[in-house]
Length: 309
Image (cartoon, rainbow, N blue to C red; front, side, top):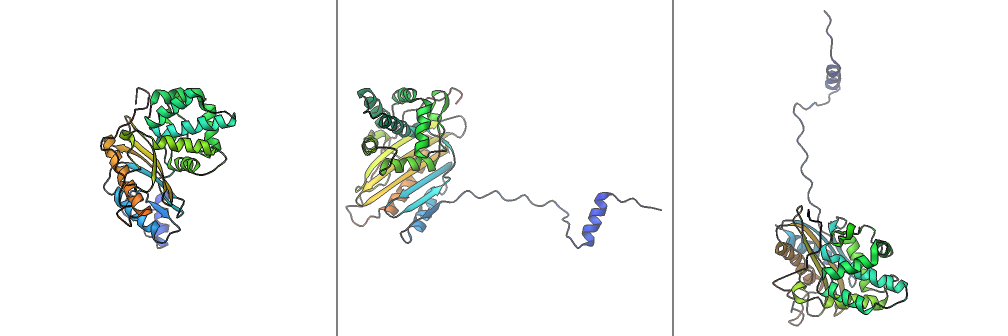
């Protein structure tokens, strides 16, 4: 009597004959990948380790998704988390709009008009949306993309159909922009950089929250924030800031989404900011121990988004 052996049977027999262990149950599914960790480097001994530890602790038990960029020129310190993840910009894109306006004016060897300076001041200091929409339309996507290319902000994608609040940004590009604003370069003139910083230093009190939290009294604060609620990923809450003075020169970008409320996102950002300031400018006396306390009632103008959210 002959027996016909299926192909599967022959493979199984061969495997058994070769001493290969054949599992009798399906392999367990791989464990979910761990979330990315904060990464820091520094020329100052021990600083990277302390920053990494304190930023990680600041994020412990916080819900939502957070992206972070920190750069300190004084100690060549860098920290990153999700640096290439894309977020809806909300109002932080207004710094890019102003930089584009100044870059374009420089190309044409002209000063801003009185109308442009009025719009620019409202856009940055009060986060005025109509002023932003006016400048966005005046510049047009060609000029905005031209500036982004000149600035090396290759992953920033302007929002379509005039919805500048839906511009796609990431930490890497925002940190590039902050570096351009805070050091001599060929893209922005010294006067342009000083003008942007002046307006970011004059943001109204109700919008001076986020990255300035915990900044020492010895540094000058420049900030621009944004928030936006959408039907997916809840509240986006962002803050970019630069800090200089007393021998210090550093900048910070914190982008968040999946926040249950706007205030929840603000608290997350401020927890991170306090950890950064504490490590970059340690309090050595009662004078430097005075830390910046942001508004307890944060506000921001809502950028226009499509009705479907």
